[in-house]
Length: 180
Ligand SMILES: [Zn+2]
Image (cartoon, rainbow, N blue to C red; front, side, top):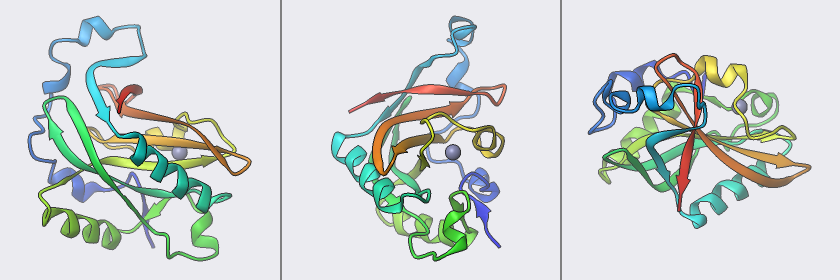
């Protein structure tokens, strides 16, 4: 039995280096009120090459969802994605169909791999086959604070838009600025 991509309670115990709970919203809480758009001061820095890699993963997995980790360093309010790590590609059949399942074992493997390089898990990506790149209720319900949740839409096998989302203090997803 696996938990899904967002259900990583153990990751919660070890927030990436530099993360200080409550820091992010101190100054722009009021500014953001009612905007429900891009959160001021939060940026996901991700190169066009890395976006291309995610798109390739998403196209390969279609009509199933792909899933993986966004790996990099936290630099102030900027999450600087250095690489992606696809997760669960070896799954077959019915397991592939389920929503971006990820086991604790798979996550542990990722953490071991990146710790050697001095990198952190900044978030996760997954694809929405034939659905818009907007978080589902399920996505929101199972998301954890801090992490970026990048979503790539795949329309009839062709990857289209990539968006990224972060939970606010009310556990509502707000879109995150993407910078290459
Ligand atoms: Zn989703």
